[in-house]
Length: 102
Image (tube, rainbow, N blue to C red; front, top):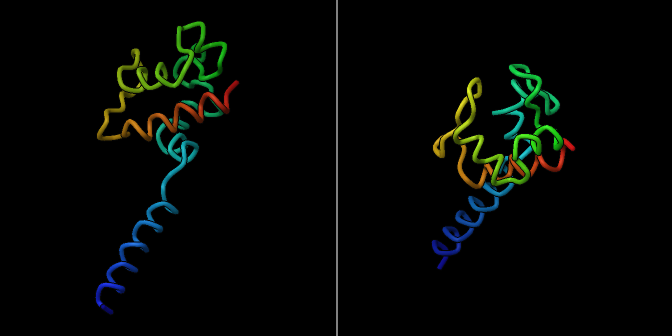
């Protein structure tokens, strides 16, 4: 009984710790995107920022569109495959971009 309780406590700790250390969309944006897109801009081609009006001009209006660009970007941008950024994390980054750069 004591061994089961100890095992359950260890498993609970692992899950609780994982949740605490899960990266947010903002943190992942800073890690993967901010070097080329500081403050939603674009150091490579200033015409293609992450601000709503610029993305809309290019037909990107939602998280799905941002993720599509992350996976298969235009010339000059690094592609982020699912091994580098999972679909869940890509969605969190896209949601952060949509919420932050209006």
